[in-house]
Length: 188
Image 1: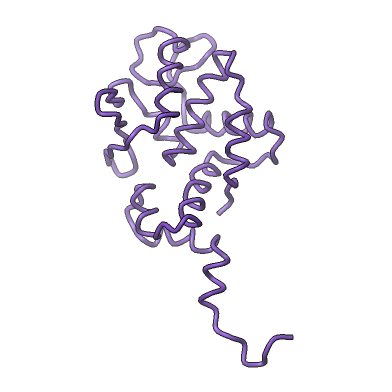
Image 2 (image 1 turned 135 degrees about the horizontal axis):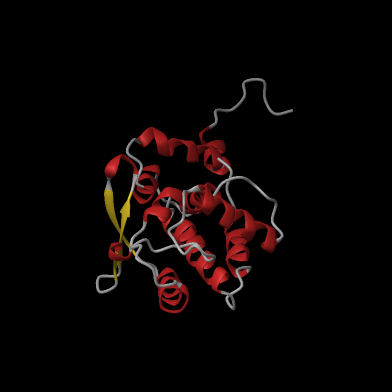
């Protein structure tokens, strides 16, 4: 899977202009993708009532009608609070993330999240790539390199099947080398 290295993710996050409403919204979205590994559709579906500030948790509507509760990291919570308190326009929608231009309504679909990532990549001077999954895959890769098991990664990413998580074994070349058997013909 394609992913961003941790340094590139931090560069991407720092490239969001914190002095503009759009930048603050996009920063909160990017943090949800990078720190919690949310899927684009999960970000779009996020509602105000899904955030439990007292417990420091967020309820995520995932695939197969799953509802999972995840802890809100401090930087994610701060970005969400800033966006909700200062930027998010008042409107009848209960969705967290709204369009920044009229008409003020919820984001249409998960493709919008991909556009947020694409704009952020361009601002950060990183190679443009399709998909907001770069950040989800980046989280999984960072966890794997940090010693997390595939089962732990699958739990964080909320995979239903272990085989879904196995794609991340391909990115840990050092661990794969240790498993490789010596070549009978010897090294050349």
